Image 1 (cartoon, rainbow, N blue to C red):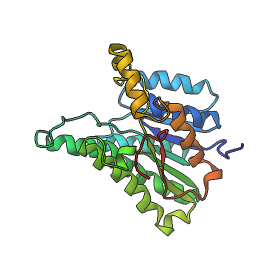
Image 2 (image 1 turned 45 degrees about the vertical axis):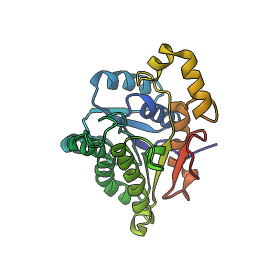
Image 3 (image 1 turned 120 degrees about the horizontal axis):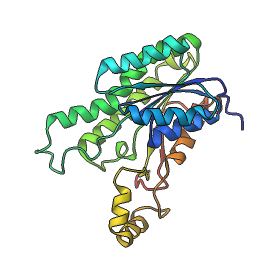
Length: 260
């Protein structure tokens, strides 16, 4: 299937590892030129070399999205080099394990940092990129939320941030002046994904039988998802084939979520 992405320019925030790198890789395989940003220069270097082997242009930027100036520098650097951007994937986020189980003992800073790293960063990148997309009358903005944003599972500060990302995309999707300029706004809500170096491998090694029992009990498919499975959904939503998908939140969770 020709997804109509050949030659498009895309930014994947937090694109140096995990789900972000899988999305960047899948977009590159469709012929998109890729920009990525991350706090880790080492990860960026490895990711940039990996993506360049797919025969596309690659830009990388060291950026801490809790710093507004880093976001501004990333976007201005992309527009200076390419002049435009067709696809924005707001992937950067996290904080689901920050704080502790006690709401009373978790500081205001955890609440604000988790919100700003997720919904705040998505808002800032989106606002800065929109003018270029409106000028060219085509754009795809996809925000990676979580099934935690669809139901009250997880720590409250993370749930609030992830539900805000979904709300952001939906509220922009109903703005006729934006979508009639050829821009769509959607969110993808992954379930639990096996990403290296995020703690799941250690738990599996510590208690293989217990880990297997947990998978059998909690996940209908008996396993977690992979970054590539999330990326497949994102790439389709970014494509020309998905032109009527707007304002949707698509759960990619193997049936993990209990809600409808």
